[in-house]
Length: 447
Image 1 (cartoon, rainbow, N blue to C red):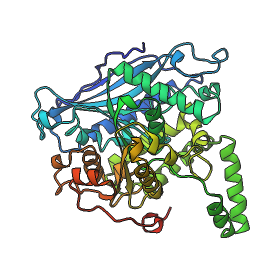
Image 2: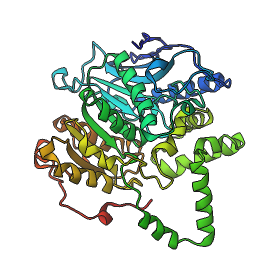
Image 3: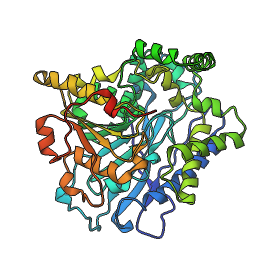
Image 4: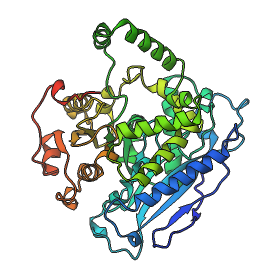
């Protein structure tokens, strides 16, 4: 049985907000301990910013960080004979919950007892949700944001994924069993599971194997939903110049060979790598206008990319070079045995909302076969990083999707538009923005 180490106090600030951390040995094969410490420091800075978002008094909640042991024997590893690891792994998570003496804006009787568990996207981490975790704890009794194994402050162990069969199924099993071991260790009987981007893909795979542990699945601009269509690729290629096609061929070759964005950035001088991170935040997150907040976020993203980890190696196992699913979840979601699946996309999202719409339509056609209820929302003023682009709308959307719209102030938290839902879902959410059936072009955004 995997063990959860009890958290110990870690530099609690003067306010009653508590930050706790468990210190256990970090497992590396290449002396990256010092860089992991820098990433931990960057996380601590974002935890301080997390307190500023969510409309809660600092004394009304606690933030803890926890490292949970994941035994090697629960993972589908081919062999450990050549592995540098001689100890079990661990998964890092951030937990937000109300304090006993707190006077919450929502009474305990109206809070959602089932904990919310959030999985981050590719090359991201638990604190990418620093603008969200505190606010969501106004509605959920407990909110967890988890670093996927091989990512963030979880065990990185570069090369470990090479010990897993290269098939999609075996790789999914690896991450699913790690999450299940984490759930058992934390003593969570059932959860609302929310996954962003690649975290959404892993969440679907988890629900396929452990549906009894998921009250509801929330997919936040999920990756791997859509099918690759050769005719669309051919059409795109015909519109490219010879130079563009050659460059694309090179990129696809490197992608298939396992070269990741992070491994590429680590080959560059530190000044260039930092410049790339800064440019990324400029382009993708112009809403982060406070210079100090921006610096804290850039530092977190920089060390996330600079530290080698096997989590980045999942990319070409789950997605094609054109960013479609190798094993698309659009065909799998309608078969899930969880009661409800909710999609949330941004209105400027490069993930195609049509994938969510297609999953809704396939699920609706299977309702007689006990498939899930599916609904699709679209958040205004948001791209793929919707949790940062429009954190108030993100908060409203997640709470509404789980049935708590009456707990959300529409004046402070703008509600996303409901694009697709069956009649019961639409009525239960009291949402008048239900949209009639539309074609792909209306919702597909420029990438």
